[in-house]
Image (cartoon, rainbow, N blue to C red; front, side, top):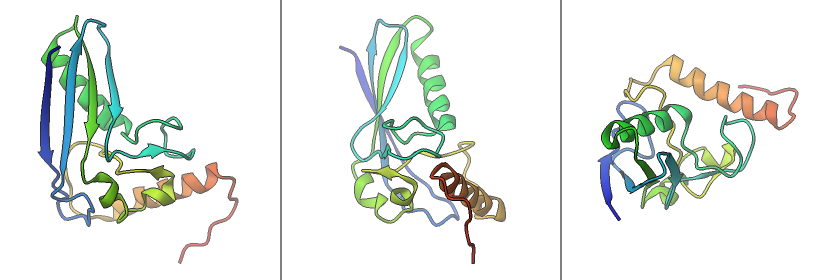
Length: 149
């Protein structure tokens, strides 16, 4: 069984990030299926509420980072082989307590959210995206009116 593990130390940039400085790891195990499967392990949250754009019960790894990970693995292993990739963060469950994840229905750990893979300074656009997600969750929960302020 061929397996490799890689780690990064998250850089939150100028944003107030509960995950700044923590290790996030990926363990890839090769297989002959030709498919790449991505799962969340220790410290990665599970989606428990509609509205975040991921299936209920799935690991809280958004589409852009999911695609980035799958593309990087495919490039490394070639077109014929498969791999089971587990993303995990040993401090994830504790760090998630400092985030809005539980309010968003992401339980048991952090979410891997990224949109571009590039850290940009805190901005109005960043705040707007966060607010949009919160409003989408409220809409999915059937809330007709929200008071801001």
